[in-house]
Length: 271
Ligand SMILES: Nc1ncnc2c1ncn2[C@@H]1O[C@H](COP(=O)(O)OP(=O)(O)OP(=O)(O)O)[C@@H](O)[C@H]1O
Image 1 (cartoon, protein in one colour):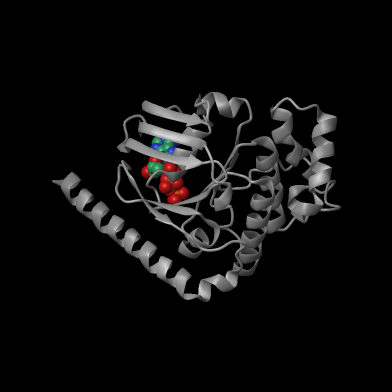
Image 2: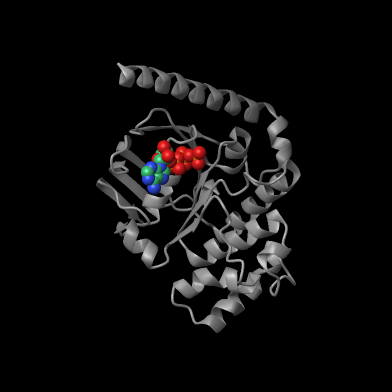
């Protein structure tokens, strides 16, 4: 995927945000993602990762700063309305009363695609997503991995330029998770998707990403960054090899630094 890296897909600049009456979550945050990149974000729980996604997806409004999409720097809230951003929240959020077909078509319908065309597009994609023959099933009839794939298909079809994936595999068992990670990489490479991915799992971040961003302090004002220059296509055997292990050591050191920085910040805040 790194060979596909091109112009800016997402640009966050001078971002400030706090929920009303709560502590600041972002203070002057800056970062960019380039077209075709797979970027993961690792940080402690509760630091504001999901909030950042909700800001990018236009579901919350920042107090200051800009969030812009694509080379034309369209404000993210506008870009989201026009279907340029696909957002897959932590829980799959499938509608229990809608079939697989109707759930997956929703993203396209919200973009104004006629129902019939939306369903045709979904049907074309089902085999690639390991969902052939499930179009008439309801979410409660699917496994956890299948539900995540329907949710991912909805996000992929619903938002062409930037996909925001919030811990999509956290609820899955280890074996399903590994096969979903390999599958996700294949789909993203085929569709040349730009992805911003939240995870708590260091191996997952390294296995999937071109770059890993680490939030080192709260409020988040800067992200430290690790380039993951491992060859593609990748298989899980990579995790046993020296270059992967070296990167893992680096990443763990970055996380530890962030953790001690945060603890110092907490002590200062308490004084
Ligand atoms: N609607 C809200 N109103 C007030 N505070 C909120 C709201 N949503 C989230 N928060 C708070 O904002 C902080 C950041 O939450 P957020 O969900 O973005 O963290 P996170 O880094 O994604 O956590 P996790 O990794 O556990 O999912 C938390 O302290 C949370 O309690």
